[in-house]
Image (cartoon, rainbow, N blue to C red):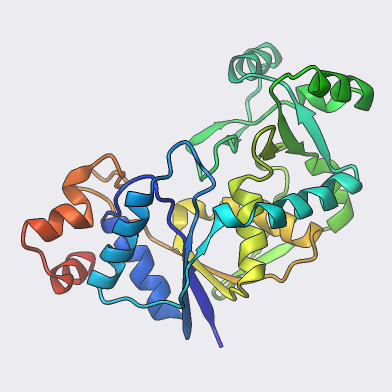
Length: 281
């Protein structure tokens, strides 16, 4: 049985791109799950969760009830983080964004990759240069005890040495994992025991997701997620990254663009059939 999932963040209304992703996931498997990725407490809103439920049912989609909410799973993420800490794979980072940018400028950093400080897949940016990797455990402990803000980063060099070479399956193609393409990513913060990437791999395993369908903008994120799966000895799903739905200017839709929200389109008279036709489904 193929288990798929749609995992929106309740930080805005669903738009046409979400509709494409949800319908694709729904029609790609035998069992479809809805997961609410609400670990971003500052921006997540219950009203958007209810809107997600309404929009998906309006599109004619059904899913296993109840839907999982990541905000109820902090204990599972903390347990995974303890696992990584116990193998000395995590270190505290006290750098601000401005300090990271200044360090990169001083080093003349030329390589770029996604900056995974954000919870979800962010735009391209410079890799973290590893400034705090050389701090002694004693200094790190003292600065944490003093109340400094910090993030917890994965030491990717150590992690890759433990896992050895990795791959992931993208339909009929086998990708070789590049564990270094993001640098030492953030996997937790002082006030949050997880990151987007850590939560995703823990929950995909928990829900026995066997096929991850999502936009091609997240293809690069699969490299670090496969690394985390291997480190935590979690099962490896198959992947299918579909093309993105773009606006008339060739740009990816945003939750800030209310004109293409499913709610706005519905209020303007669109039917579910109209949405599918517009998406070429």
